[in-house]
Length: 588
Image 1 (cartoon, rainbow, N blue to C red):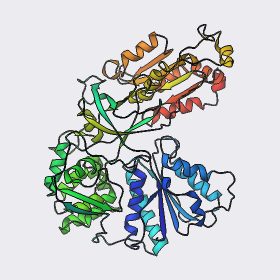
Image 2: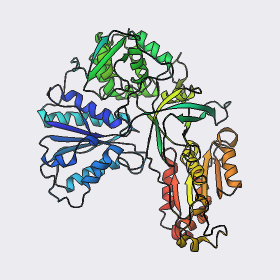
Image 3: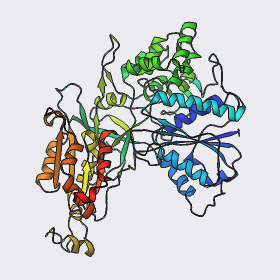
Image 4: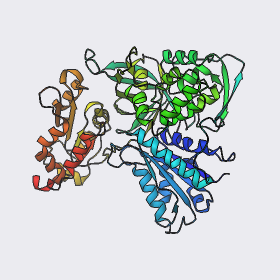
């Protein structure tokens, strides 16, 4: 059973990967140490009798939300009938994964740690709060944590020497036969552990893949991808779709050739590592296509693991240096500033040629990418729309072509009838479904997606009857509100949308659609901010400031709700500061 139990809760696979990263070197001391377990598969009642040290690895979803597979676990821990000694015999540690771009940074891990302490559990090591915005600091913090954990469990401070190769996570066996490979998609795993926590993968075919931005403007390519779901798929405005991308064909063939792998060879795979994104048996080509993240940024831990496989001493020393704290600056230059990918590391270190079983544990797996759904299941039944910015950039390295993000390359090359694996989960934007005051939406760039979904949904759902309470409140404001059924959108007094982009002619997403909604009265206010059309840049937060009196009035007096979507950074913080301003009442 082992001296340690690792429980993880993940939304897109990051926490599971981190749990495996922690668990893998522990196997050098305990052959019997079982692999990490999802919180969704563990009964919280067993914590009270758990004799092992329990290590929780928890990601935070959105702005402070616990992952789906942790929700039942968390709800049970919050039971008010639990005494402050309910977990008095539990020893634990917490590792959190979050993004400091959000105000509620690592909220899930913080809340879990606080609750465990309140139930009498013993905290054995200080919580580690990893920051996706600072991978260098995360690698350093996890290195220190790993040393402390080894000392706590085994009295050691180092797992292995740099030359030691740990046991592989997977066993690979070649099998006879011909693999039925598809040119459009792979045989994706139907299990829940391919990256997202609950449910199973679904398939969709591409209806269309069109541009929303001016294609003549370099660096600005936003795609509107319409998918037709093969099976019925229901979702609500604010929900999220996870897309499972594949590596580009050129990158796959180059990697197979470089690593001397026969892409046609069919293999069976077993092991204790994270579940693969492919079914077994399958061809090696399909494994590289759909499981290995060839275009990801190499981490310090990745370089450290590779060093054990370097045959040339010079390469082994170089990899060990890049993985050290002293070499962190050079690693940042090598991996981030020069934008090298995982595959390019193998090119730069030609004596590093591990076999397939080791590669499966070395190369990070492809994880799904999350997008806010930009469509309404009521307005367009059986369809899921995505609004995605295609990421392209050049590196400082000579003779390298323009780089394209993995999911960007996957989405940009989709043609009608191509198949796309996906999964829909609940989002963190909970739009109103009952009568309420005005709805204020702030969504620059592709942040418009969930608001497009909400606007389409609210004008297409079945008619409902307004409760007497709301008839009496709003009848004077809107003469169309009567006892007869009426569109759902009439429940809401007003919809207000703040949208921002660089230039109106370049990337005003869904321009005609939004203008039509405003002119028809279904969108009462559309405010745009085109940041590059004047000498002084103007953003949506500036537009909110210029409408502060009106917005303050509806927030204070009309029970308005305000929703923000888009990249984390200055914009959401400015909106939050406006709403929380102590003089908001005085503004009205």
